[in-house]
Image (cartoon, rainbow, N blue to C red; front, top):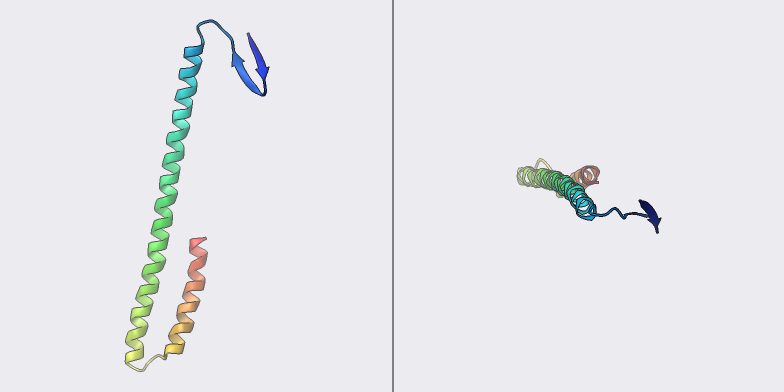
Length: 94
């Protein structure tokens, strides 16, 4: 026998409570593991993207500093280029 109570299906079979509880726990555990793995992959992807964009920006600043010392680039050009790269890398982060 089954009846609906506030949108929840209630099982009123004698001796089936443990079976239904175990089945619910098993299903809940599978959903939890799936969610945990999915969140882990998203966090890893975000960390890799952030590290990549920060690394690229650091390399650009170092190379720009070398070019400025050699008088092949001005500080203004470096700022413009770095701003452009930062603007472009926001697309990777979002």
